[in-house]
Image (cartoon, rainbow, N blue to C red; front, side, top):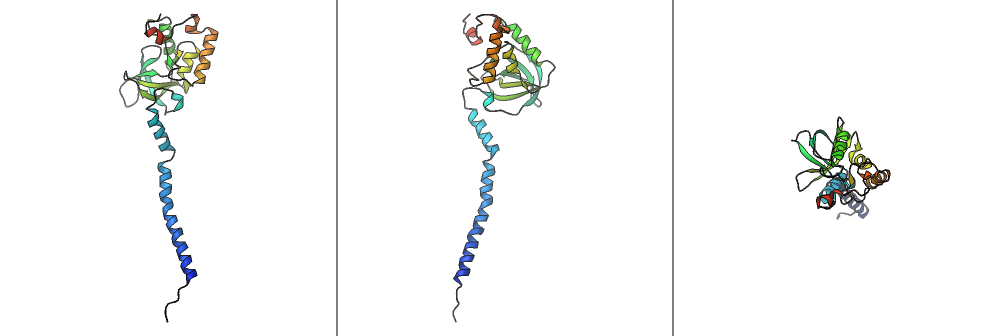
Length: 199
């Protein structure tokens, strides 16, 4: 007698086969999810951020790196020792301090020195500029140094590079309203204008 096919059993086997093939594909989808997870998203954001013209460290918070202060050049530029690397020039990216030959320039440098001396410092690095300096933010025991400088009238909020920073905007408004630091002068000249020869 010929073989009798059990069509119900065949359908069950077929369903089992499909479910087995689906279960085999799941780890592959899981792998894709892992590859496209938060780490990859951050890496992609960092890559895209490198092509932006404006610097706004608040838009992308990088890991804070412990550093040691070596010297201070002016009110917004220092030289730092980063573990494992030679000394690096570092520029605060969200503030613009008066030039050393500009009114309140020396006071601004002294203000930054007082803000950094003997403190536990960390930095977040956003980029390296055309002068070879690292650019980013400096933190003193977790507190942003740029906000401190602006609130004391030791530096200007660098709107061109941090246009959406509400905390810097409010700090500058408070310093200006209170006549702190460089705002003691009724019409202080912005450093960018000073560098262009506008006095």
